[in-house]
Amino acid sequence: MLHPSAFLQFLDWHWIWLTVAAFLAGIFNAVAGGGSFLLFPAMLSMKMLPVQANATNTVALWPGQLTSVAAYRDDIRKNSRLALLLSLAGLMGGAVGAVILLNTPQRTFLRLVPWLLLVAAGIFALSGPVLRWLERRKGAIAGATHPPNRGLLFISTVVVCGYIGYFGAGAGFLLITLLSLFGFQDLNEINALKVAATTLANGIAFIIFTVRGQVVWHYCLLAMVVCAIGGYTSARLARRVPQPVLRGLVVVIGLTMAAWFFWKGSS
Figure: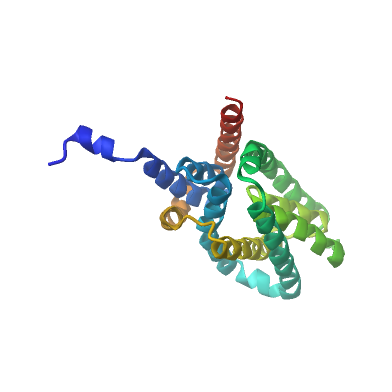
């Protein structure tokens, strides 16, 4: 029989941290977003190179996004032409961002990590107030719709999806804000178009990272399964915990992770 002390020595706490982080990432992504704030640092803790950790994180989280496509399929169908345009923008931007990531030196990317986390946490912190503003704006100017400039919208979406392919944390909110600035008011429509763009952006990044051999699969597959379990169990949590509390928790986690990487980089 294995002695408890021997068992504790055998047990690798990094695997436990990765499992817990993946489970919580699945919950956060399903309910409020921001799962990468936990899962990406957990991937780094497994002694992966920074670029590989980011690529593995992207691939692990992507299957969960497919369920969002199914959830918004009716709204996507209503705006099929625009959804197709933004999907193409997502493909282009995601491919460019992924290629830039793979050509970024490991040390350079590691130095960028705390700044990327800090910016993403800041973006996420603004999401609550901006979404409330969108709701008020929807009620104030109901019926006053203007067709968007599709060329400018396409280019802007390519730029945001380039960030998705490169790092991506908080990018969903960036797309929500972008679409609102182009005159979209219905949040279901906005979310459907966002899902179309982000799923394709992360999907092409998934393919590029896989083809280039940047995915550490034994960590990735564990995170995929546990994220899916976390996402499945999130419905009960969503009814019990107010979204502002979850969003605040995500922002605190993001800022804490950014501070940790700043401290680690200076030590």
